[in-house]
Length: 120
Image (cartoon, rainbow, N blue to C red):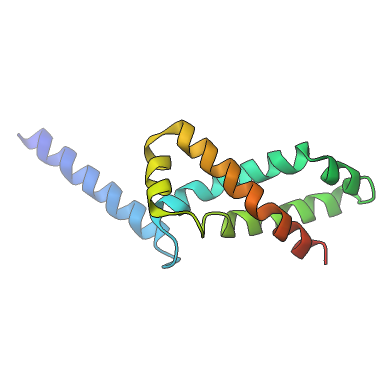
């Protein structure tokens, strides 16, 4: 009985800690915050696979490429999930396939606008 109580206390403490860490931005859900690094990584992957990015990168120094990529993917990770429905976010929480599909679509929908903004 004591072990169960301690286990529940630990679980509750972890949940409270998680919520407080992710509660900095009141407009984003916990799921959006948890998916943000995954979206950023997906953005980097999409950029590196893009023929347009590869062509543009030929005319940039490696420092400039890194800076622009960081700026673009930061923008994407901040904005990609803003227009995603709560239902889709919930599905992404439980299904790896749904998560991957959601991230890919969110990145593709926002990378163009973020790239245009970063390259102004």
